[in-house]
Length: 254
Image (cartoon, rainbow, N blue to C red):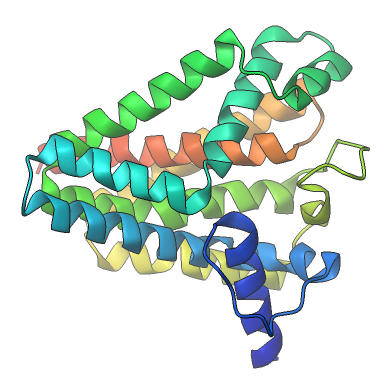
C-alpha cells in the first residue's frame, strides 16, 4: 500500500508539473485515475517552491520583482497547465451558447478575447494581492492557496461527471470519481494543515475558496452538466485567487 501510494504521488507530480519523476515509477491510466487524491500534495510542492523563491528574491530585490520571479517560477514548474485551462474555459463559456459549441471552443488551441482577458486579470490579481501582503505574509499565502486550490479543483472530480466523449482528451484518465477515502485523504493534505499556519486568515481563505468552487460547480452543471479538464484548471485558478483575496482582507483587518 505504501509503494502504491508513493507511485500515485509521483504519477500526480509528473502529470501536473514538469518535475522529473523517478524512472522506476510505472505509468498507467488506472494509476492516473487514482492519483487525483494526491493533487493537493502536489500543491504543497509547488507552493513551497513558490514561497521559497518569493522570500529569497525579496532579500535582494523589491517585493514586486520578487513576486514576479515567484510567479514565473511556479508557472514554469506547472507548465502553465492550470492557466491554460482557465483561458480555454473562459473562451468556451464566454463565446459558446450550446454545450457542443462550448466544448468545441474549449478544444480550440487558439486564444480568444474571453480567455485573454481572464488570463490577464488572473495574473494581475495574483500580482497585486501578493504585493499587498508583504514578503512573509505572501509566502504564507502561497502555502495556503496552492494546496487548497488543488483540493477545490479535485473536488469537482468527486462531485461531478466528466462530459467529454473524446478518448484523447487530456483529462480523460481523471474522469473516474474519487472514492470517499480518496477524497478524505485529499482533504487532509489540502485543508487541515493550513489552519496551523495562521488560523484566522487561513480559515477565511478556505471559506472563500470553497464558496467560489461551489459557484463554479453550479455554473458548470448548468452550462455543461459536468466538467472537463479545462474546467478543472479554471477551478484551481479561481480558488487560488479567492484564497489570496480572503487572505489579504483577513490580514489587513487584524
